[in-house]
Length: 355
Image: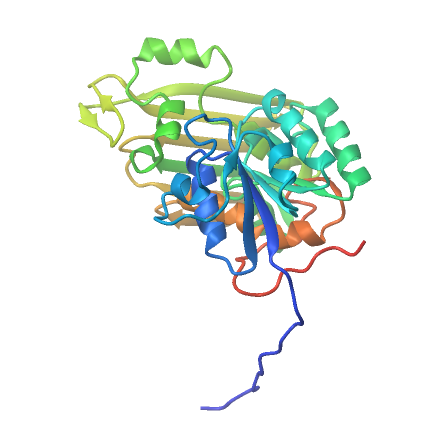
């Protein structure tokens, strides 16, 4: 065996742990908190949630880790910041801009960076142009970064396809397909896609515009923007996936002919030509779960993740692993395009941007 190079580990000087606030303690917030606690370079210093059943309790109890952490869950960020200083807020509350916009204003106004799983924040310019401009100006004024990320949107159907185009000389069209067996996912997601309801109930909920997967069009427009494509139209459809037989998930009973989940399709069209096709099926009992990215161009690429990317694991990972890039990025409201290439946060010290 030939040794090419002997490497010595070097100490990179003293580095303080990144002080993190958990803002939102639903299933994703709890999973994110547990992952944060496993990282030596992160210190969870505060937790915020509006649920009366969680407020006033020790964070360790809320996370279900079997020990107390000495951090009490409070219902307001201002209360938390009276007792501690922080660097980053891991924000996991609502999907929708009107709900989370005032939360982000409060966080940025306090001089804290934000890494959020809120889907409409992934590409906020699509549905919140006015709010985006205000958040960008505020973030730059306070010298912080606001970032929306996650697994979908955040990685599978947007960031990963853009990275893959780096080896292409030309891209003519992009198709992304994600098939998810929702029976393996958390209860709020199963409820969000209608598991167990009737087809008529599904149609009524779909008409509200606040039902189903949030972020499919954000992913599509993000990729179009990265490729420099000016779209004339973005179309989106949503339909139920009906159960061929009766079955139960961990949380819901599904009768034969009732809803097992949904199928959403979005298309980006320019000059009467479909440039981007996004197909998402999330249904309990879906067979052959996978993620697939098909790029037509030079060269053609067809990349498939067998089994699919497990969202309940990947979303907390994306939030945590984005922290080092956020702390060195130029202040502002950013998307994954403006962020340096993220990777897993292991045990290395975390650098921060220079003042």
